[in-house]
Amino acid sequence: MQNGVSVLPKMQTGDGRPIPARLKIEIEREWKRLKMVAEQVREIEAERDRLVKGSEPSGDACTEKMRRLVKLHGIGAEFATVLTREVFYRPFQNRRQVASYVGLTPAPYDSGDTKHDQGINKAGNTRARVIAVQMAWLWLRYQSKSELSLWYYSRVGDLKGRVRRIMIIALARKLVIALWRYVETGKVKPLAVGSLERVAILPNVPTVNESAVAGFDVSVFFGIAAPSNTPRDIIERISREVAAIDKMPDMRDKTAPLGYDLIYLDSRQFADKIAKDHARYGKVIREAGITPD
Image (cartoon, rainbow, N blue to C red):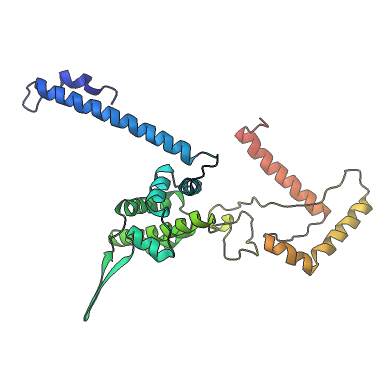
């Protein structure tokens, strides 16, 4: 677009003649219009990005919904804006209303003894439906380990063609409904936990270790530390008291709803864990060149 009409003098018609003067003038006019529209599009997109990616309170419900959507990996400002302005600005009572409005619900044919499926009902919002299908394909790329993606792969397997196209519509429907719930409540469905073992409060949520990256462990822990010159008998007494607290039923009853699993480590085990974490994260920091700045 930079060269623009500067190449026109060198261009010829299909039969080798120079481009007529009046046609050249008309092309120049159209080129100027195109440049103006392109500039306006860039300005609008820049304004949209500032609004969606900003952190200051907007006072607008739609803007807050767009900001929630762009926090999800695989959803950019374009998808977030179209979905919010075309779909999520409206109040819906249930998931069926959401799917019907987007036009992603089945359209069965039932007449006498004849019963068959006619595909999806395309009576909804066409622009939102197109965006939803595009987003579903990209969701498989950027969220390949998510529950929705695994659901799709478990049903499609190695099949190609029509089956994949049918199932991508089903995935788009599920994805739009999940995003609607997310923007309305601010809550997301957990996909994985960072510890090596599953946590009691989310027994059906897999770990990253088992679903994506073997050996992944970024669990958070709390412990009790003492000065290095503390007598050994005092350390052992504190350790015994902590072990007794760990076995109290009411203690577990209070921590379980918070998502904590109580795992007792004696003083030597705790020191060993700290040393291993120090070595592991120290290597990451050095290789990544991370500094306090």
